[in-house]
Length: 181
Image (tube, rainbow, N blue to C red; front, side):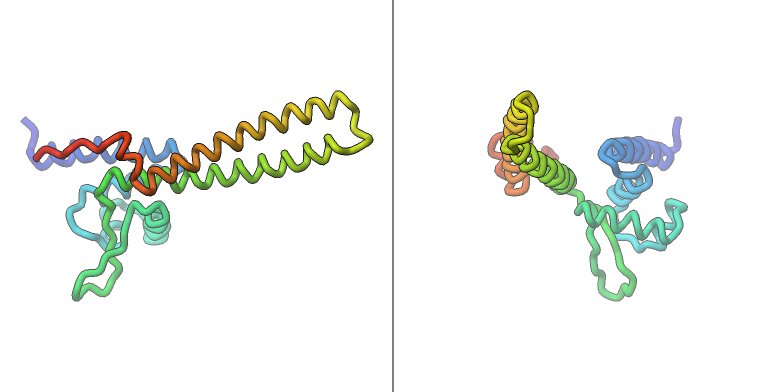
């Protein structure tokens, strides 16, 4: 029979590993994902030094990882009376963590794609209106413009979807389950 402390650590470690793997799918390093998982299971805010000691990372790497998690709104800096060092804790609301993480990633992707599409539409439109452009190229460019306009409609829809997450309107359509204690 396993030692209860060991069983607790094993159960936590399994989830922490999965969190790290999932975050890695979205361009976040394993170490940042592991840090979030570790902070999530830690029941008290921690200093960079405490995290560094627990995870065996350098202070610079730990600081960079914490900053990444703060940028994703997955970790907050907290204040405690009498403590002079910065303390950090993981966001425990998984709905909000999902919303913050994905909307940040989606907004960046949407912006990058819309900018590229708009620039291409402008160039293709100029190409269509040039007198020295062959008719076959004008036709292809016109078809491309229509395809790209459809893409812009998609990104408009995606922006509205992201808005529904940020406003929590999404929960009107897909409600959260009531937590049973």
